[in-house]
Amino acid sequence: MPRVIELREYEPVIVDDLSVEQIQLLRAALPSLQADYGGSDRWTLRAGHHVGYLRAGDLQVHVEPKISIWNLLYLLLDSADLPWRADPVEAATQPRLVDAFAQLFARAVRQAIRSGVLQGYRRREAALRVVRGQWLVNQQLRRHFHQLVPVEVAYSEYTENIPENQLIVTASQLLRRTTSSLHVRRVVQQALAPFAEQIEPLPRWQWSEQPTIDWTPLNRHYRMAVELARIVLTHAATSHQAGSVSTSGLVININDVFEQFVRQNLRRALAGPGSGITKCTPRDGLRLDAARRVVLEPDILWRSRGALQLVADAKYKRLTSAGHRHADLYQMHAYCTASKVRGGLLIYGEGETAPRRHQIPGSDTTISVSSVNLGVGPDDIQGSIAAVAAEARYLASLGDQRAASLLLAKPEH
Image: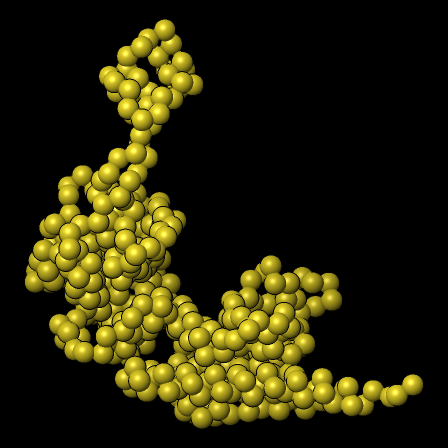
């Protein structure tokens, strides 16, 4: 019988009889997990910002988020630009994250296939006894020189074995393995039942390189189910091995989810002609030093008509009693200095939503600290986002004020 360990984000739990091998696997699969040895195979485990389900041999670990499961599902869907339904469903009553997500996914699959399983054309290459489609002459000569049969051909096949169905089937199989609830497993299996057995699940390597799908009126009703399947495969736990034991499961990095959620919502709120919100990458060329060796990568860059307006960072962490963390302020000051913007915005996932502004002496830099309250319902979360967007506009206006003052101070010739 498997052993089950229940953890909650940022709460310590004392666990007995864990081997060093098991601890190594847990640390590898849950990078933010803290494990302190207390002697006699007793460990104090403190989960970080990685939540979900992990299996390592006969050990099952559930890590639940500190925010409500309902709210985390909302963050996941909204950051993926998926519609959110506020009406209560069975998913909201599930005590575990994986089970709630599986319920939500199964409902989306059922809705997608109400009018039948989607079919489409796929190119196939095969060696047949008769010509079908296009004759592949080069392959024929290379593989069957001086032979007329079999014939190397390529043809289009109308089939259910298309990327949309492959993503759904693969995610369904993973969810069935990662839930310990017989009821949830049965719900997922029932949703999967109409799909043909010949649909090929995606190989493991393709989970991180998922096929691109063009949405048209013919397949648009599949989008919700397919995008939820993408979320499942994206967050599938990386397999780690120690001896004969390996890990599997579904692990969600809430830091990444919160960052994507904030960026996506600011992109909507600050949309306009020539406006763009992006994640900073090394290709953006943001460097701290003159030698350009120190690379800086803030979470959010806001450009308007090609000019950088604002630098922002999303922090899924608790604020101190002072309403800020010194290291984060130092980091944001470096971002503002390197990018030559006047305003920097720190966005936390907990704390007062009213912004706190810090004017840096000896410079034109203002750093604002804002929060998105994740402990309230989706409508109120959106209210927090609106306040953050308003603060972003204010900080961007500081650069406009500086440009105007420089223009007014320019001497006439």
